[in-house]
Amino acid sequence: MVALFLVLPSFASAQRVIPHAFFGSATVNGSPAIDGTVVAALVDGRQVAAKAVSDGSYPVLLVEPVADSFVGKTVTFTIGG
Image (cartoon, rainbow, N blue to C red; front, side, top):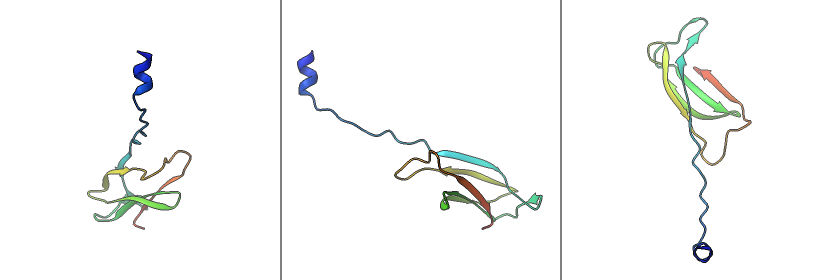
């Protein structure tokens, strides 16, 4: 059994990072945001996702790191720019 493990090559594969999902209501000065207003997610100042408001809320925003982790980074949301 030990010889079998020594003969087989080892493969290391990185696990895919689970995307972060955000959803909710969007308000501007206490009133629901107008349909079409864009809610954007920024990680350390770089936009990573954006969705338009509909009926005062925004659909699920999936924020998924492309090549690295978001651990320890700041996520900021903007409404309408």
